[in-house]
Image (cartoon, rainbow, N blue to C red; front, top):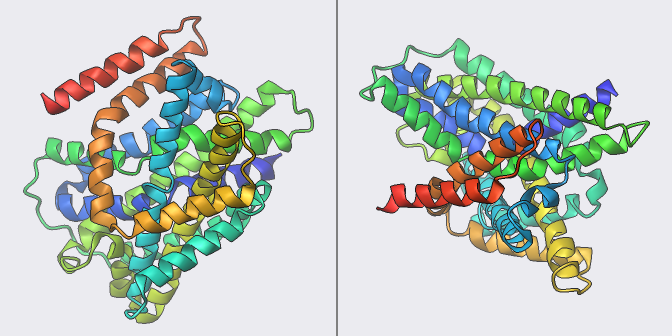
Length: 384
């Protein structure tokens, strides 16, 4: 069982650690410099603690995300689940994965065509999710060790050669707020609502007694702790790297920051390894998110709502087709749209997750009142 929990924990880390996670902590370091120490807790709050609140909330529902969202009402819950999955799927995070993977590889292969690379990335993602029951094993046992190893080596080399950070003009409280804001941009709370269902299903399949809820809960928490710890350590290292190498990164685009640091610290030959690691990191996240969206299209929309039989292959083709088109918008445009949406929705989603965690111990249900109340308040504070 230990191997199963470790595999699930590594897979959880890999699911979360995708495109934005490779960019925003580094970007945060470059912007906060000597005050990155104050920015780090803010980032960890919204990029680690908040997403794992979402994980725990779904785990409390025995991994049943449908039951979780249905507390808002069947139709509102379905619409909310679809919107979240669309944002973390082909309309947001998956295209961002393609762009970040390309940003790293372009430093090694300057003439690489982005449309051609996007098409290849989408086709490879589709091939990897063709057999959906193998996704967690592929990510946990194959992709994650490769990704984690490359990232750890880069952080160790980078910190060894790091120079002292330059003084920051951002006040300490401003650095904390900026860290919290960038943590939202990872979209990991939204992802956590769906990742947990995948992890719980994987762990349940490996239980000797599949009805043992206590063992399932303990295994889920164990995997969550492993994933959260790995994320925390990597984020701390990345923020420090960004702060230390900021003077040398002025001309680097956000999606190419990590590869640029690799070139500075390890030379042009290591750049090939790190760029490949970047691409694999993004691929691992794209695989799980594409699988989630394709299954939602097939089961929740086609079969349960429209009462039609959508072939698994068709749902995959639709998913990667939309992903390819949205990726052509570019990193900045996608982040701009996502940032606007997150500003108003995240507080309501956090409140909903906390409510459901408390509901696990106390017998009450104020889901609708809390979610819609916080959402309306958030909209009012943002636009009025």
